Image (cartoon, rainbow over all chains, first blue to last red; front, side, top):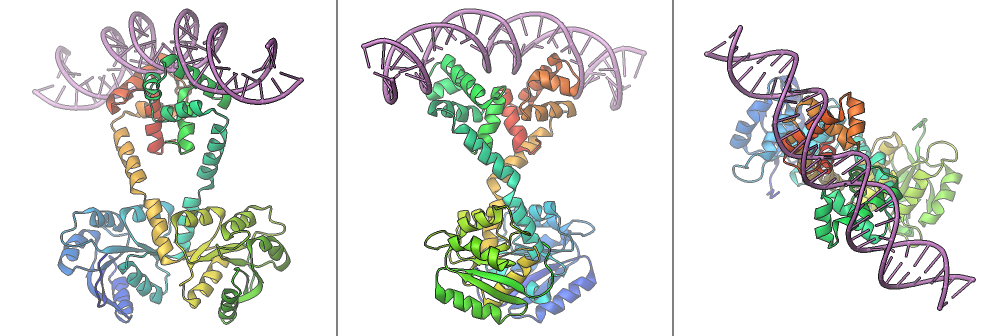
Amino acid sequence: MARVSGPVKVLLVDDDALVRSALKMMLDGAEGVRVVGEVDDGDGVPRAVDDLRPDVVLMDIRMPRVDGLTATERLRSRPAPGGDPPQVVVLTTLNADDQVLRALRAGAAGFLLKDTPPADIARAVRLVATGEAMLSPAVTRRLIDHVADPARDDRRGRAEERLTELTDREREVAVALGRGGSNAEIGAELHMSVATVKAHVSSVLQKLDLNNRVQIALLAHDAGLV
Amino acid sequence: MARVSGPVKVLLVDDDALVRSALKMMLDGAEGVRVVGEVDDGDGVPRAVDDLRPDVVLMDIRMPRVDGLTATERLRSRPAPGGDPPQVVVLTTLNADDQVLRALRAGAAGFLLKDTPPADIARAVRLVATGEAMLSPAVTRRLIDHVADPARDDRRGRAEERLTELTDREREVAVALGRGGSNAEIGAELHMSVATVKAHVSSVLQKLDLNNRVQIALLAHDAGLV
DNA sequence: GGGCGGCATCGTCCTTCGTCGGTGGTCCCG
DNA sequence: CGGGACCACCGACGAAGGACGATGCCGCCC
């Protein structure tokens, strides 16, 4: 994250020469940004990065040989031959949930759709160079929907609520069960005989209206007690 | 999400009169935005929303009586007395992970830090009115780090990987187990005898080096196969 | 074709789980 | 004080789970 001064060095990765030249023109016209190289496929990225040391890589997804997501994963996870790996901004036309997530998990700091106005692309490049992040509004929307995930959230809410009807000891047993322990292991951990563990387990089953220990374990997980 | 034409109607919520008037001046000077009201605390929001029908609420977090997050939760979850509830953009000075998440889960479509340039605030207001979303770059960064969650992610990666060494049938059994089924139920579901289910379970236990069915169920969950 | 390895299927046998009943302890209420 | 409700604890026993071995089926490779 140690950027010094001077313009942000950018590497363009896109299989379409027209797109590349448009981006180059646009970015070189912008303040504080300079295009230092271009590559026409994901497989050329590592080499270009080593040679040119860009601060930011502007990466297309769809490319013939190695796609942009794979290239991003490789780039961000490799042993960094001298300094941090460059930041990656993915630039694509399509906005699919799994692609966004995969890109961000791979370490991308930006995800822009190709309808992004030129000024914003330049701005995104400068931003990610400082360690911050920028997404297209529609992508932001998707990401928010993903983390908000009402389904998961109220699963957890309900699970927590149900666990409150348990006694302390029962809850401890339930949590230990959530780690996958056998009755014997739980007994050892909580200093009680196997018979007692069973009694607690039975009580939990009855109170929560469940059929077997697996369901207790899953519930404990949903409640986030593991 | 049915916005018609005309300027976006905005309600300001902030306990500081100075901040409100600054925002009002700034927004009324901007294209396509009009401030239709101001409130000095979260408790006044429902009333103002009913009276003024804003498209967007610009909400501070820290307020004396009812804070902005609580107000957002109430606003977005109530039975919508006529049309969709307005979109909420949270506007605050501090960028804490739990606050961001809570706001977004409550239904906020924007989260801006108070150092956001005026033009961007107006822009964010127009954007969220159309159903998209906007976050400050630093907030985006946090959110990305949250979803990327290396810990969870490679738990899942490893779980998936380990499950590949199973045969199809074994994997089916593992998934059914992940739903909390007994051997008898699994057998009925997959048309095989209890003895066969047990054989598959045993095989899975051995291949994955686990001790009991609970651990299989948890692994299946980590892998996201439920 | 014979032999070999992997898979799905099942029955047998021991281990673990879960149910049932019971003890002692605390607290509270009439 | 006597009873009732709740809790933690335990033993015994039938039911489910899990280990093991066996069978038949396929595809593969000398």
